Length: 193
View 1 (cartoon, rainbow, N blue to C red):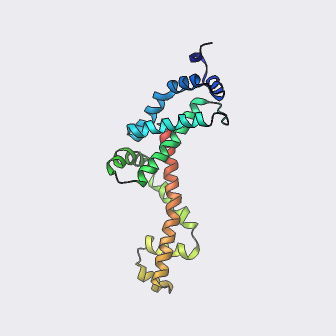
View 2 (view 1 turned 45 degrees about the vertical axis):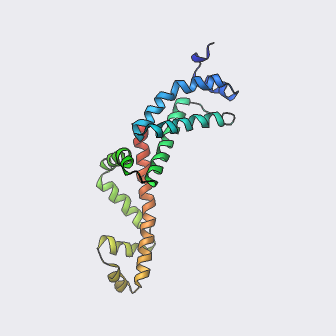
View 3 (view 1 turned 45 degrees about the horizontal axis):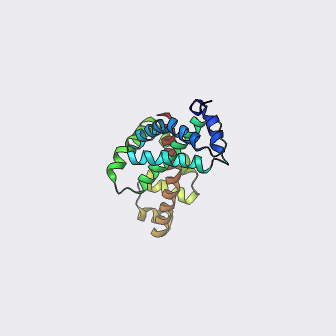
């Protein structure tokens, strides 16, 4: 049988036996679809190419140990994870604000539109309730009642530095679950598109 007529799984079995022709056929079968999928989300030709290249390199490098039952599912899911990693990297390297604005912000805005204010409030309130007692009290006095650090220090008979430290720790603790929820929403948005 001609290799181009093999199923994805049959091609992958050939790849596991170091068949470079099967690898090229699989690559040609999915390259354009995966590239377009990545490009629509990243809006960067180079980033999209890098993402797809990386996925195919991993397939070849890990061919002997990898078991893939559905190649199409595996490829698109892998590209989705790589897109999220690329977006995180873009956010970390915000030197090119144009790229961030053009590629990431519209996606985040779409997510925020879908998440109602009530959902965000509920998520934030759940996370505030998980804070230790004194830290939670200081956070609520500052952010929900609008008291200044000096006022909180006097009210709770604490030093201003203690109030500042507790407030910083509270914000750090709240930032992680909120950003994780946004990235989970981002992942869902990317896989649905």
